[in-house]
Amino acid sequence: MLTDRDRNTVIEELVRQFRKQLQDQLPQADQTLDQIEDLAGKIGRQVSQEIQEKVTKQQSDLPRSPEQGCSCGVWARYKGEQPRTIVTAHGVLTFRRAVYYCRACQKNWIPADARLALEAGTLTTQVRRWATYLGAMLPFGEAATTLALLTRVSLSASSLERVTVAAGHALRQAQQEQTQAHQQDRLPEPTAKPPRRLYVGIDGVFAPLRDAWKQDGASGKLTCRYGACKIGVVYEAGQDKTGRDSGVVARAYTATLQTVEEFGPALGALAHRLGHHQTRDVVVLGDGAVWIWQIAAKQFTGALQIVDFFHACQHLATVSEGRFGKDSEAGTLWQQARQEDLKHNRLKAVLAEIRAWRPRSEAKRKLRATEYRYFVNNAERMRYQTFLEKGYHIGSGVVEASCKQVVTQRLKLAGMHWREETAEAVLAVRAAQLSTGASDLRNYGGMPN
Image (tube, rainbow, N blue to C red; front, side, top):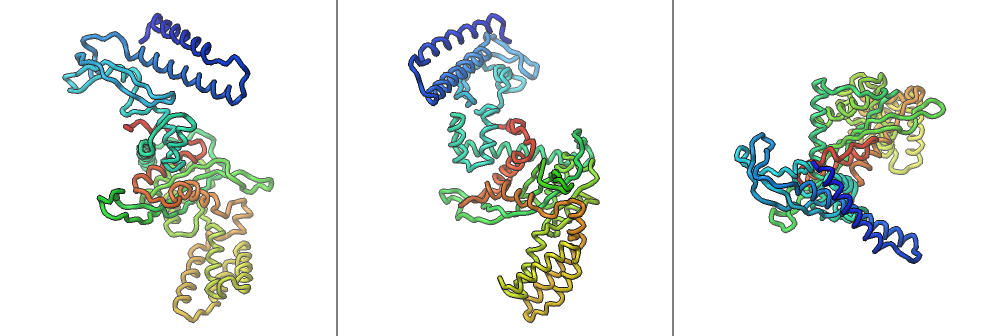
C-alpha cells in the first residue's frame, strides 16, 4: 500500500509535468474549435498516460525483499524482475515487476500482479469490453478499425475476434449455469415489479457455417453449409389509448445454434428472469412450426398460443397460388376473403374453401392436404377476433425483427461463413447487447486474450 509520502511525491511530480505540458502546448493565438478540440484531446491523453504510468510504477516498484508471502501461505524467494506490457484504454503500458518463486506451488509468484488485479492476457478489462462490443456488432476487421478511430486503441482483427469469442463462451457458460439452476428450481425470483403481460416469440433462421478449413488449403477445400439458428425474444408490450397492446417497452433475446432441446430450457430461464412465473398472462407467438409449440408446452405450460397472422396469410397465399395460379385476380380476391374469415373467427369457412378445391395433380393434392392440416392443427391458435378483442398482439413482428437484428445483420453479410463455435459466441454476446438493460460485458471477459 502506498504511504502518504509516496502518494504526495507522485502528485507533485505529475503536477510539475502537467504544468510544463500546458505551458508548452496551450496556444497563445486564436484557434478554431476543431483545433482546440484536437489539442484538448492530445493533452488529455498525455495526462492520462502519465497518471497511469506513474501510479502503476509506484504500486509495482515497491521495495524488494528476499522473500514474499505467496498466496498459498508459504514464503517465496526473490527471483528477479520481469517486464509486462498491457494494452489499456489510455495506451500501451509497460512496467517491471518483482518475481518470486514458490517451491510449494512450484510456480512464480508476482505480488504486483495481485495488487493490480491483473489477469492473464495483454488487455485490460475496459479494452476487452470495447473489443467485445464492437466485435459482436461489426465484422472483425471493421470493428478493429472503429476501435482505433474512437479510442485510439489498436488491435488486430484476429485479436479482436479472440476477445469477442472468449467473452461469448464465458457468457454462454454463465447462461447454461442459470438454465441448470432454473431446471432445479434454484434460480431466484426477480425482485422487480412483475409484468402485466409477457410475450414469448420464437422463430428460426439459417446461418452460413463452414467446416474446419484453412486459407492455405492445408485442410482441404472450403465446405460451407447452413445451420439452424433458434431465436427467442421475451418482451413486455406497452398499451395504446384503447387498451390494446402496442409496441415494446422491454425485451430480452437469446439465440443459439444448439439443439431445440438445449434452446428450450435456456428460453425458459430467460423468461423466468423477466417475471414469467410472476405474471398470470403469458403469450407465445410463433409461425406454426411444431417445434415451437413443443417448447411452449414444456416451458410455458398454460400460456396462450397464437400463430402469427402474417404466417397464416402466407399459407393462404400458398393455397391460392396452387389453386388459381400466381398473381391471378381470382386468387387475390380469394385471399382477401379468407383473411377476413380468419380475422372474424371463421376458420371453418377457410377449411371449407380448402376442401372445395379439387386439384387434379398428385403434387397439388399433397399441397392441399398439407395446408389443410396446418389450419386444422392450429385452429385454437387462430382465434384472431377473440385475441384482438382482448388486446393481444397477433403478429410476430418482434421476433421477425429479432432474426434480423441478432442474426442476419451480423452473421449473414455478403461472403460470410462461420466456424460454428465463433458464430455461437457472437450470437451470445449480440443477443445480450441488444436486450433491454444489456449485460455488462466486463463480467464475461476475464479470460486469456
